[in-house]
Length: 115
Length: 117
Image 1 (tube, one colour):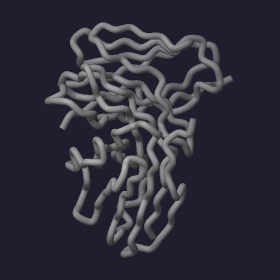
Image 2 (image 1 turned 90 degrees about the horizontal axis):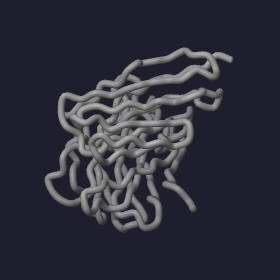
Image 3 (image 1 turned 135 degrees about the horizontal axis):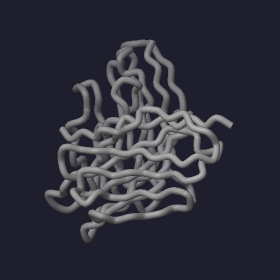
């Protein structure tokens, strides 16, 4: 099946620093999504990307859908304590027809912020 | 608006027992997904439904697992008999139906933490 390679696995940064994480795949994805998960909760959608080359921002977050459709990155600028959590990339493959498709998830990036 | 609602939040039971997890999707969403999260394997898709019809159950690990969606507002994931290796957090997610080439993002519930002793 399809797999997503997400890196880095964890990040230890100082408050105020910028953060960058990425996902790559050996196969083409039709959609890239970035989620954040806090302890004891489900993943919460941060950004959705639908077109190759698309660059989308959501506040201090910026994500891009790679032109080859095989990668995506997420940047967080000026990190704050509440950014702590696990960030997941996720994607759906090429559609064979109509209907929704299940997500393939990366293994996550643990973000830890030191005050 | 209410999000995806899952119950119970926590379940602890002995191996061999039947376990039923429940999910109420967001009103108006017609696609529903069941995922399992473990430390070793991360988040994995188990099965999903479009308009109450199961589309892809290739992620269901064994015949001990079954899922139903009797109507647009309710789904169950059942494990019978349960085993210790089934211990995980099980998430339900829902979305609007895919249309015109743009996927509709999935919204997740807070999960059921299942422990099989």
